[in-house]
Length: 122
Image 1 (cartoon, rainbow, N blue to C red):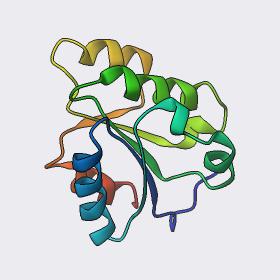
Image 2 (cartoon, rainbow, N blue to C red; image 1 turned 180 degrees about the vertical axis):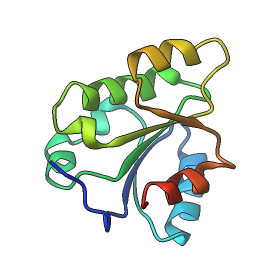
Image 3 (tube, rainbow, N blue to C red; image 1 turned 90 degrees about the vertical axis):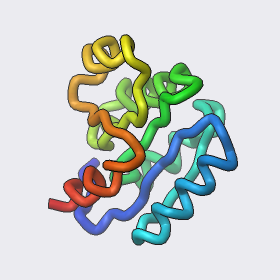
């Protein structure tokens, strides 16, 4: 399922609800539609498939397993591979493993995230 260039939907996967909402607020101010989830149980694959986000932003700062589980869930579907995976703050020492598992993923931090998101529109 192709994602249109006009797609402004994002999934933000973050373990800490206050930080997630602050980040989602900032992304919304940049014109993005943001859905926040904290783990794979909150991810409704039927909705994701029907209205795929432009990207899934996965915070790895504290509980990287939550981001990994959602990335794996999306990666295992043929349609989920068209969703850009953006990993935030990958723990040092784990980045190589994440790169091996998700070779097309983008690795960044919160400060450079707006630049990465802008590049998705090109």
